[in-house]
Length: 307
Length: 225
Image (cartoon, rainbow over all chains, first blue to last red; front, top):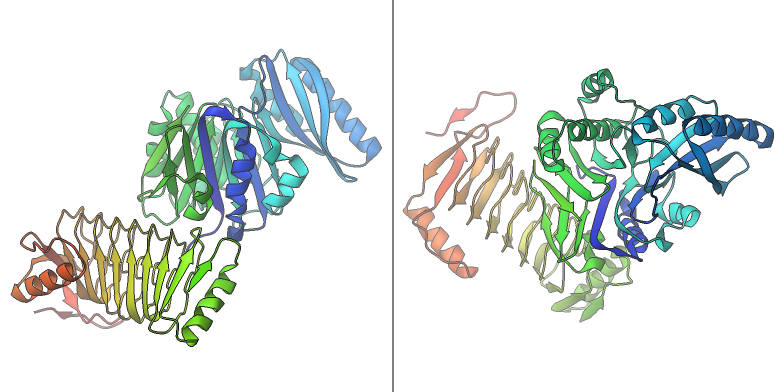
């Protein structure tokens, strides 16, 4: 009845050195909502001008992995230039590696990502001017791997996963990203019951799905609306009308976060507003550390906070 | 008696409450509740529990005889399945306030979420502000008073009982109709609102009642008459 998965969002008008630790604290307080995965999109933490951060999972042992890295480098160099390579995780079975590429126009990021994604043993985890951290297990585990709590930033969205619809692995953990609109990501609690119909329409318009997770169609849906010139408020209003099922989801873009809740109000969402700090959560327990005024979101309601 | 909830697990807090009630404690103050879930779940006894902050989901679920005051907000399913007692929330409450209660009184001073009084069988729920979508869903008895507005599909599939409201109603659910209040209603409203510190002006109230009563699944419902 409650519906599991926990979602949080936080936006500060000014950059905060402790934004990472705030979002981790909020998510830790929602850990009871699931243990299948956890993830964060963090904005304003890294300062990139002409560059894009491409975060990849590269599977296989040494020789095989090196072959994959060579193939990745070839593609990235074709689109622009590799500025740096940094291994974030070095596991015996896989690496998670950041490639900083320069000289690529955003309009080519989708094509670049698709080409890399087509490589054997390589998966694109995120691509943009923000950072995404996601994995199976608890938020504590994700923080131990990626050190999210040590990072600063302006805004972030986070997800605690209780899997109901698709696989339990790193790719199906939230957030999900669209490569067609800059740095747009989503976290979601619920089910989108008209997923296939929505997906069909979006794919026909050129949106590329990397998983069979219903949440992924939300980010493509919102990206599609933003590309068409909608404001985030208008896109969320439209999503409440067009998407079926029980849901509460949070969208992040380079300068805003927005929450929408389904018409029947079957998934919980609260917002908290201060002078320069705004937060969203499935439950008040995650908003307690912020000491802000809280408010339940009504069924079918949506809200946007902008920097 | 005071319990600082900050570093305690809910199971431990509830065990301490139940032991204190067993020892004859008449008032327990919960400090730093941190919107934790299931606070005071299943407590039975003549005790006042004062919560200095917000509570999470299922606060006061299945209590009997308890008087519970929450200084701030409550999460989903406040007082779920309560059989008797009094629970008051000074702020707002989430969805499913008083879900399935068999008796007792719940007072929410602010707004309440969706499906307030869902499948309640008896007892009283008073909401000082608005009550959201599908208030009184499958309501089977008891009375609800909403001083503000009712959002869409109010009284959806209501079978027995009444939802008194003072503001507007967005739309009615199946088997729900709006009726004028009678003298008996007016007297009861005046009394209960005064008792709980609300303005007792009753003229503007209307009520939502079932179109057909004593509905039993699988059989033809009888007219209310």
